[in-house]
Length: 180
Image (cartoon, rainbow, N blue to C red; front, side):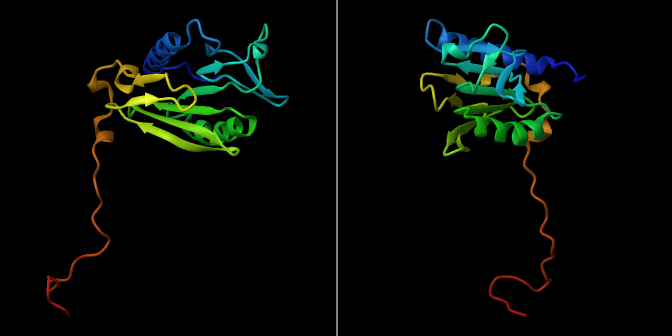
């Protein structure tokens, strides 16, 4: 059995859902949260964290049938490889037009759009950015609002870029204008 989602995961899902609710309320497209089965094919049933459905005939009594227009996955360290590799390929192959990966631990949102059967980057949005959908231009979310936890909840070391020393040492006599 998989562990339950963390408070950070659920908080991001709640905030993202609030933004989706504001955008899609009274519109032809609907959004849904996990747990909700999405049957992409006879062999592939998934439960994305959040999805947008624009064709009402896809909404069945017990599940969603076929590819949602947009899928959001909130990445945890244990799901990162699965979400970035297997699910990304599956979603592209089955026609999900837009795929968001949200990383709470580094406060980052990646938005991919489907182009000729594979995903291309639409945008990578950090805490000071406004995340914008490729498919739904009016769907814009200030990334900071997705992460309501205080800064001390984020691993501060991830925000620091440290360059490694080069694998060589400069020779003692190397300086401008000198050749050895």
